[in-house]
Image 1: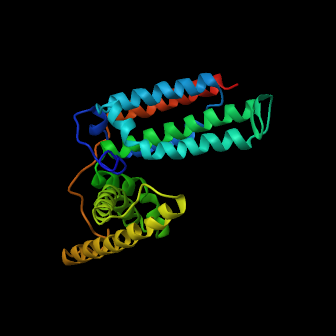
Image 2: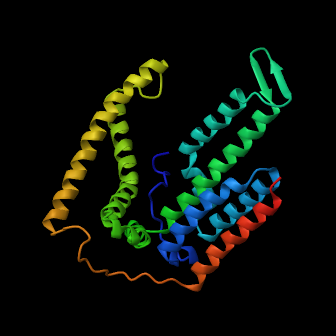
Length: 265
């Protein structure tokens, strides 16, 4: 599962999405996060699903690989689904077995919220899969440039977000190595009572945090040795270019939002 983790991982490809301006992809993701809340019935969620599937196919990355990399997050989606089923007590009772009662509104909310959560995860993951961390930093910094007038540290904020995304796969790989090392020493991490499994997490967390702080210290030392002084006075080696494709993709979001508004129940 660690090897298939796709969060924060950039996968090169020749799709038109990879060639898009990072600013347009960032705007696309932020706009989609808002638009997804316009859906409130089966038809609108089906349209959102078709749009999300089209976005997944457009990046020329196997859908099976994308879904496989999201398996760890699917547990969170399943938890959300069960939470709504068991605790939403509205509408007609569909199932009444002892202490278990499933209401119509509970089932409806469970399905819709889980789908909304899944769509958001898939689309936001496509951003990191098709955009390198450096491009995300440049795009985010450009979009936040107006905040410099109020002395907001735009460059530093963009850099921190980029480094965070970049180190997600690294930390996952480090976790995998620690698990294998602990298992080789006889640790039982996947068996036994729940209490024992929770205790076994501690030997994983300590070396993981120590390694993370060590990596952060090494990165800070390397940046200082190269004369990094922040974003003030820095020039850009990579020049961002907004194309017709970027405008067309954002235009598709406008069409999607209009359709969802019209079909809202």
